[in-house]
Length: 580
Image (cartoon, rainbow, N blue to C red; front, side, top):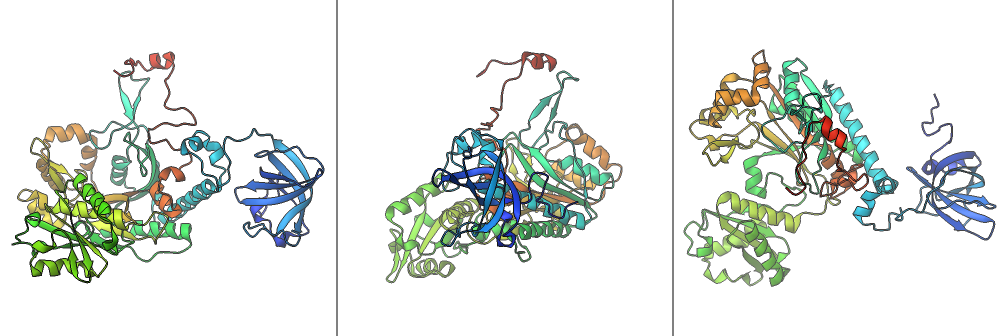
């Protein structure tokens, strides 16, 4: 086999790999005509493009080619004449001369220019995605994605994991995100669903003795789309037996850091961690963006006996905005409106000036309160301090959101800061029937120090659940699973799930556990989100070959579409009128 992986029967080299080292050699390249420039009647300059770059070919005589024609050019690699070197191209010092051109496929004029310098409406791009994929950015993003996938597979293999494919046609599950439903032709009136994740399948693999499983899994959820969510998504999914939470964090960290090194050329340092409570208290969110230093500070003790009505709440949280004293009143009003839209009663602001605090509320403060505000998070003259007084979780949420609004750099800027967030609450309040609701899922193991609180103080119970966060994006989540029948029974009881309901909803998993379930834990993270951050893209559509629009449409194929009357009959379906 040839050692030159670029060579095929039709070409010797890729366009972007031709260099001064090839001068004097006669080479054959293939690609698309990116641009044609005439020089007199009998001389043309063709910019030939493939995924590796652009190479200029000098063609003498007449050649009938236009933009996006697919051609094969054979020529001699030569130095470009003095004064014509193009420093913007990797191949800018050379060109092909004495060329012969073979047209492999003609092309109509494309509906938009493929030049990266030209902005194109996204709907036009998606309607002609096959053309959009020729652009440098899409080529770079999808090849970056391939490199990330290779590194993830290698990392998991080296850590002793076995890749197992789980079904795409699965049984309907009783909870979680809305599923895509697939009618069965052979079993009329019955349905499969497309999996939201391989969660139950991978736990069954643990019972089956595959003690380290992984999969680059395709998952589907029928949920509203946004910048970081598509109907179809890809995740690295893993599960392991006879492990602790720290083991899982170690496995995933190794894979993610390997992927980062493959994508960026540099390996990040070890990934730190914080508890959910610490993240909420300091950053107002369980997805903290650590690229910037603004942290929330609790002033509740200072204002415990305040005479200022605006601060008469159980919690008073403050946020310093470096340089924010220059904000106009209009900008401050916008921030106040944003805080109210998030549920706050209001937003207090204080400019730090050389003469003291500048705020409508400044004159109502006592000395201790004014001093505390002026020193929030090391505040200096020229800074702004924002304060929300409310219930604890709401105050944290509002200031955490404002923190991101005011401080978070774009995805394409700043370093990559990873952090593990651990010890999430086991329960997240009660439903309308008074039953507790699981914060993760009902098979998450409680924190061992909190077993005694399950019946007496359930909302204080921590779980062994954990998230991996990168630059404010939740990459994924996981947990140690319950494998003990006694603990599972206590959690079901706390959730108001009877034995009969448990059997109905989770019977085949619980039945498998009766035959010997090992201690196990797992994790899954979104590859789309990870690659988007590596690529500096704000929207995961830019790292997916054929994405859907925000309305869920595929503009290129026209999906979703109606099916034929015969298909409807075969599936025993009855179609309701549109809009009914």
